[in-house]
Image (cartoon, rainbow, N blue to C red):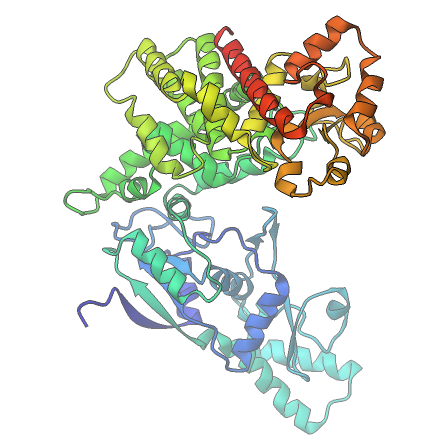
Length: 586
């Protein structure tokens, strides 16, 4: 059938393990890292022992000339002909147990998978201390396939030790060697694989995967690129994972680290920064083909072209994971007022701003002070408008296209400043933004931008002399957060007035930040009751300044609720604009 995208190939387990060891089959951790719990490994061997099928494997022809690369050991021999798309966990389990090699667990720690077998009851179990001490068990079946193991001597020794502690009948003496041999013979267990042609696109491979995978997991373009990195640049893949892991773990030895309390990027997010910096592209679909060494016109693969593209990726990643660059960029988050991770309503905005910052720094040589101000404004604009929330790759591709044909620092600045002005028009500030605030969503980007603006403007907390920026410190670990979102018109008070719709009660304009003690003291009292008590703490001048920052008209607590919401939305938009403009002045 000429239209088939695959061919069916039958293997034995032994042949699969041999091909992995010699590099014929690449075992990159596409569904990374090894995430099966050990009981699933036990069940896999139990199924095979009882003759149950263990499912198809799905391979993809790499389509590249095989060169120096070795999969399965620490050596490097050749590039694999086949990449594992589905079945990585099964193959890793089989390879780890039958070859006795350690795996990398989900915490990136090396450990052995040790499975035990009880010949009398024909049970498999995860090895533990009790099993190790019990002569009825073979505590580690890896020994059965170990190089140099003499099976006859192994079985003889096992039976001798067993007879010293446990009397055996003639029937047991007959069947026990057979059962152990049956375990050994699992190396000949038959498995079928579907091998997809190298000419099939990654979209088609992803669709095939979804259609045959009962769990419904989907593959995305970052999966494919990370797979290629596992095969052609394993160290680079490990660097991304290590950086991602240590970014959320406080260092114990005070050495330089990517750790921070603001933003913890995933490996695939860092990869997107790599790609944007290396190739000025955001669509990973295009980049995947380029990294495979594929000529998009002739559709032919070239090892030389692949090596050239990976060289660009290596150079970019050295900048992306540079700790000085990383921490200098994180200062932009704080400078832009986004001092707490909960204010970051779009991780894509952070990732793509980091990419643009690196492009401005490395490729255009923009003055650091000017670049910081510009990218703080870009981040603020992107988060406020949800720039990268819908079709983020397409949006970033358009932004990168704006820079084509430019090569001077002043051009870079002018292009991005012009785009900011195009988005944040006078109508946006006066009409669109107030409407964005007319919502009950707790993750509203405009509300987060308002809190960020309070940080930029160094505003005090409502009814406090403490500063919003100080009390939003993400490193605080008290039982209650220093600041809490407070309903200016409390929920139960509004319900007593007959306002019961959650969307009306939880309007963004009905929230402010207060110290937790004040929030507890206010409880569900009417504003006309609690506000005069709070106001007595401050002078008229302090109250005027405080109310301006918190977008509250004088004697706001005497207003009709819906009139109050409309007026406060207008004032909040004005404070957001003021904070943004403060960034422009440095």
